[in-house]
Length: 275
Length: 202
Image 1: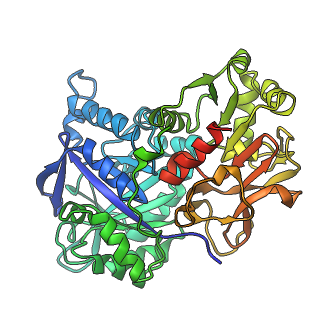
Image 2: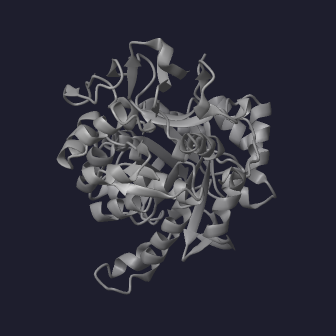
């Protein structure tokens, strides 16, 4: 009997210290505080949580400038959240150096998610993978369908197109020592029109690395459709968890009814475990 | 006082965060003298078998750790690689001698189809009643795993739980004062907190 379960991952998008909802990587609406949402996700027994700093560039324009407040604030958020994240905790956004990776792990994160540097400076990623293990490196890939229906890879928060074939890019990700791939569809981001299952299956055919699918959840059915029509390990969603009360818990309940092989829904009060 | 072995890397911070949250007083063990101040020892582990042994030797913790478990019989909890190094030897990177406190070897999970590392939540199979799993409900028996290697023990009597990953894999063991888990209780929410509490209350 297989004992392993598939995962439903909650993505928390952080912009200037606030949790936001995102549409097509461009529109962002503030929905709450990054400190309170982790307690709700704990209560819902979330399988895994990813915090993404989606506009880190402010801090990177003047990296040597002491006023790089945005990144510092984000790291402060990471430090506070990791004190209460008793589930696997992934952090991404603006990670450009080995020192960035080190800082994030020292704060208590379990994995880093790297996007833009996959196409630029890969040396520090290889170094991090060797030191912390490949399981601690998530390669985040943002894909957009252009007019001719072809997939293109974008970096830098969806602003910069890079001209590498999808298949070659996935190969490169394997070579530099990533342990998982997070696929996000820019077209589906915030669209509530369902995941790009074709894209997920295409990338699955190129690699054996565990894949996390993201982008497009408008209903619990959209999520179960991914579990039913792909072989991937994990589905992630962001915006949809902000719409309703007990949203993540309700999602897990629904996915269990659909027999998607996830952990059973449990509402837990972790504070009761205290000595 | 709970002692948390700190050898420079690993999931020290995550574990210390959980113990803080549980209001459990704990202290770092980073030199041989630190062992005298603690009643319980937790060895968190992330990284490789050979890397952990090397770090313990470099910090002169290896012999003292062995002495405190074997002779002083202090309750010990090994986590992930902290479990694996209890074995006679490990084959990760290079063959490395372990603490030799549990008969058996640490080997790579022999998989044909499934990709390693094994990352994710498993519904563990309890092999016998064990104090470590006290008060953990049947529907809570899920723990988070991240590993490619596992401790294959000679004496199956000490195995308290397993998972199945193409192959039966040891998930936890107990032998006298020695407790060890392949999964990460510090990342396994309520079940993990309960397990840590059970160990601390020994």
